[in-house]
Length: 263
Image 1 (tube, rainbow, N blue to C red):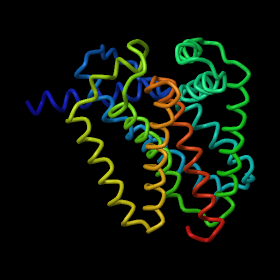
Image 2 (cartoon, one colour):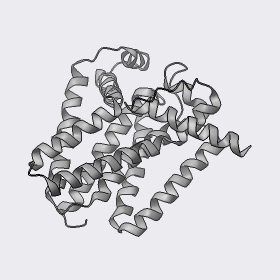
Image 3 (cartoon, rainbow, N blue to C red):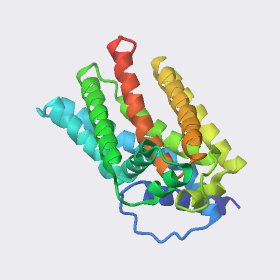
Image 4 (tube, one colour):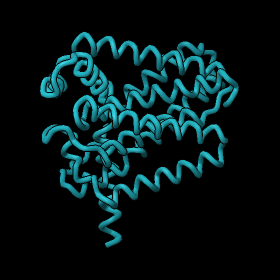
């Protein structure tokens, strides 16, 4: 039983990285409901890996090179997009096209299924990337706490997995619905453990970390309510959009807190 659990955990972890990152994992894992459950449990871990890579790069580039903060910011933002393969940006654009179309529920769902990106999607991408760039640029110029670069990507993936685990699906097709088997008590317990561990680490780091974690929780609840109001549930696009939105929101909150001398 233990060996089977370990095998499923390893496969689930690999599948999570195959789905959410551009890391070339050339392993045929197949797909079944059990594997889907294990993979969703590892979504926050993919964010933790991204955060670790960002932290190391920020530390090395800022302390051991003469590269400007402007160029370092550009690279770090670009790296996050390379890491995810642009998957979440696509969700942000599609969801924006649907929301700003102000059409009926059925039409919004059709727009999100369309592979083409409309004007609203392009504009929303520019706004998202622009604000994220400015927030990170300002943060890098203040006394740097590398813990933020570890925490923010992790929390955004925690939000992503949380949406899948507790959200109601808006339609019975698409990529997201394949993860519905993850809506079990066992996976919810896994996310509870992730949250508890996050609070413990935050307590060991500094009190401001609690504020950031609570803000991530606020975003999660707000995004879930917003998705229900707009399309009566969640889809792969709303989950991807929530990932990008939460990341930008948290960078903005850290910038605001640092501006007032709270971090």
